Amino acid sequence: QVQLVESGGGLVQAGGSLRLSCAASGNIFTINAMGWYHQAPGKQRELVAAITSNGRTNYADSVKGRFTISRGNAKNTVYLQMDSLKPEDTAVYYCNADINSYGLGRYTYWGQGTQVTVSS
Image (tube, rainbow, N blue to C red; front, side, top):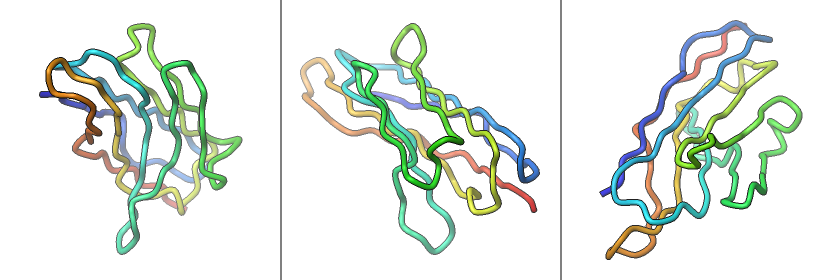
């Protein structure tokens, strides 16, 4: 199996910054892409940012210019640097990974979620 462990959420004032981290471990052959989604109360889970194995990135329009997604040197870790945070960024943030595992094929995995709260 594969595990995604997230860290870095918390409470911050509007205009502040937070950095989320997510590490993948377990039965991993290759990682095709990793990303972050968020889900606010009463709303659907939405893509925030994603990065492919070759470094191509994709961002939601609402976070362009404020958030930066990157991968660690070991390629099994993904970071989300969140700057100029707004109250509307408040949500649970979930790490997501598209992974090929030995003997199991390709699956999408999710982390447990980390709360980000931005106060006005």
